[in-house]
Image 1 (cartoon, helix red, strand yellow):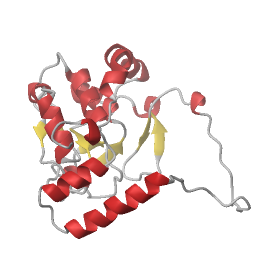
Image 2 (cartoon, rainbow, N blue to C red):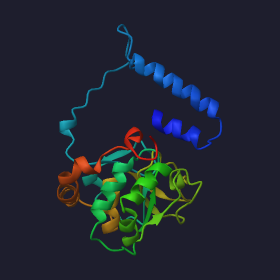
Image 3 (cartoon, rainbow, N blue to C red):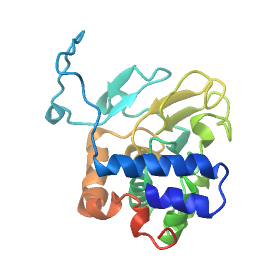
Image 4 (cartoon, rainbow, N blue to C red):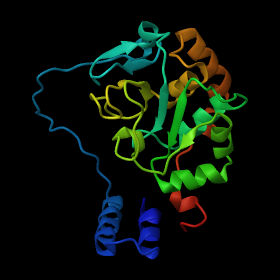
Amino acid sequence: NLALMKKMIENGYNDAQTLQKRIEAVEEWLEDPKLLKADPNADYAAVIEIDLADIKEPILACPNDPDDVKLLSEVAGTTIQDVFIGSCMTNIGHFRAAAEIWRGHKFNPDVRTWICPPTRMDQAKLREESVFSIYSQVGARIEIAGCSLCMGNQARVPDASTVFSTSTRNFDNRVGDGAQVYLGSAELGAVISNLGRIPTVDEYMEVYREKIEPKQDEIYRYLQFDEMEGYL
């Protein structure tokens, strides 16, 4: 985002020269924007078409292989000790969605819940929207914006914990020694945090329809730095 990069230079971020080059490259692209596309005569090893209308329930990656995926109904009931909502796979909308699902709920002592906004800008906006008070209400551990459990470099779960994470990979020992890690959405993670287990499809869909669907436009608003006070 141009407004953000210009603000970073103004705030004294290191290597302003690199940021300025990126700004100039973006401005040049915006004059004649073109997206990457395949050559018209490209050859493919295979063409795979997936009709998303055929997917009726969430899909999770199972321990400990991001390619080992199962439908929610196949893993429902699994006890979870840690729920992590964070990493570069998330955006501010996912954190608002989690807060909506947690609104009115209390701390579940059987689950350690971790919240880690991917950037300081997301974190500041969530504070401004008073979302952090809901995180505190459910006893979530709020991490410094960054990687946290995703890489296991800022924090780690207890040994042999069963984890639900919104991150990109669930390789052995990445988030904790012997940890068994499921990957999925922030919305599903918030429901798991309330229950202490992976929900049934009906349980999940009931929460989603009640808490998320009516407020989708409000929840899933991206940060627009060129419209935000402090970045103009």
